[in-house]
Image 1 (cartoon, rainbow, N blue to C red):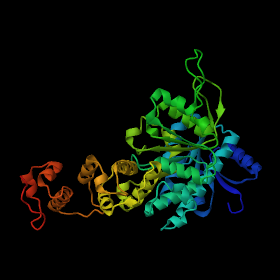
Image 2: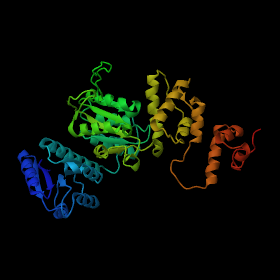
Image 3: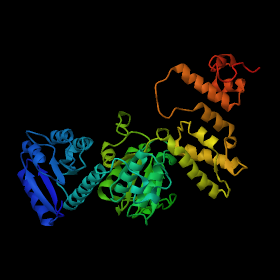
Image 4: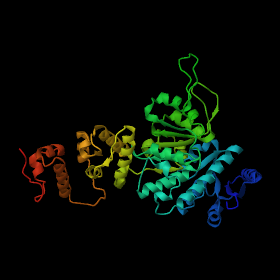
Amino acid sequence: MSDGTIRVLIVDDDVAVTNYFMVFLMQTEQFDPQVENDSRQVADLLRHNTYDVIMLDLDMPNVTGMEILRMMEAEGHQVPVVILTGANDVDLAVRAMKHGAFDYLTKPVDDDHLLEVLAAAVEMGSLQQSMEDLPTEITSQDLDHQAAFEHLPTLNPAMLRLFHQAQTLAGCNLSIFIWGERGCGKKWLAQGIHQAGGRRDKPFVALDCTTFAPDEFSSALFGRAPDWSGQQEDLQGALCSAAGGTLFINNIEHMTPQVQMRLNHSLHTGEFYRDNSTEILQCDVRYIVASTHDLTSSKFHDSFSRDLLYHVMVNSLQIPPLRERPDDIPLLAGHFLAEEARRNNKDIKGISQELLDLLMTYFFPGNLQELRKLILSAIASTTDDMLGVEDLSAYSRERITLGTFTHAFKPRKLMDLIREQVARTLKYCQGDHKEAARLLGISPEEMALYVEPDGINPRVSP
C-alpha cells in the first residue's frame, strides 16, 4: 500500500463472484484486486506476494477457507482476512474469526458495507504492524499522550507497553476489548484511549451492566420511546448521549443474549432502535467494552455470543494486576493521596516510609480501587500532615498483615515462610504474642514454636 492503493486477494471458486468483486473494487480506484479461483494456489501466493487484505470464501473444493486460515496462522501470515459466506454458514464464519479472521460478509454482499469492512480490515492490519514494531523497552517519554493516562501512573515496562498499544489503537475507530481483574483500572484506561484519540472533544459515556436489572439495561443503552400508556417516559439512552464520542460498557459478560444481539447489529451497521420503537436510528460511537473474565473460556460458550465476542476482541488489551507490579504501589499511593487530599481540602504532605513499606507487602486483591479506598480512608482519619500506619483502620491493618506476599517468587521451605509471617505479625503487634497469635489464628503455644531462636523472645505473654 506504499502508493496508496490497497492490494486485495480475492479467493473464491465461483468465477462470477470473483469477477464482480474485481470489477467493482477496480472502479473505486482505491484497490488493486487479484483473483484466485483455485484455493490450492493460495499458500504459494502468500509466500511470494504482499497483500493488505484478503477476501476468502469458506466453502471451496480442494482446500477450504478454514484450512487456509489455519495455514496462515501456522506460518505467521498477518494479513487481515474478511470471510465470504452464505447466510446459512454464519456459525462457520464466527468460528473462522476464532482462528484469526477479521470479519465476515454474508452473500450477497452490500457494496457500501464491503468498502467499510475492507477499510476497517486494512486499518486493523496497519495497527497490528505498528504494535509489532514497538521497541522492546518503552519509557513514559515514548508516549505521545502522557496526560491521557495520568490516572494510571506507572514505571512498569508492561504497563508502559500497554499504554503505547492503547494510544496506537486510540487513533482508529475500531472497537476495543479491555480485560483485567476487578478494580485494575479498566475505566481509567478507556478514558485514556478516548483522550488520546480524535474523539476527545466529544462525550465519554460509561455504562456498567451490573448496575442495572437485566430488563433495564436495554433502555439504558439504546434508549426508550414513551409507551402507549404513558407510564414509561422518554429515555435518551447511552448511544445517543455518546454521539460522536466513546461508549464504554463494563462487565459486558452480564449482558442478556437479546441485548448482545442488538449490540452486535449496531457494531456491524451503525444502526439501532430504541425500546418501544421500530424507528431505525444511526449511531456514530467508538465502542470500548470490558470484562473481568476471559470470555473465550468454555464457561461463557453458551451465554455470550461468539459473533459479538470475536468482533470486540479483535483489539484486546489486558491490564496486569497490581500484585504483578508492586513497585508501582508508592507511585499510585502518592497519586491517590494528592487527588483525594485536594478533593477533601486536606493539607497532607506525603506518606510515611513505614506505611509505604507495609503497603508494598500486600497482595491487593482489589487492585487500584482497593488502594485508592485505603488511602481515602486514611486521609479521612488522619490529624497529621503525613499519612502513617496509625491512620489505617484496625481492619485494614489486620487485612494487610494477613495478606502479605513476596514480590518475586522463589521456592522456599514452608517452615521459613511460616517463621517470616510470625515475625512480621509480632512486629506489627509490637511484641504482643497473644494478639499476634489471635491474628494468625493459632494458639500462643503453637506460635512460640515458629519464633526464630535469635529473634523476638519466644516466651508467650500471659
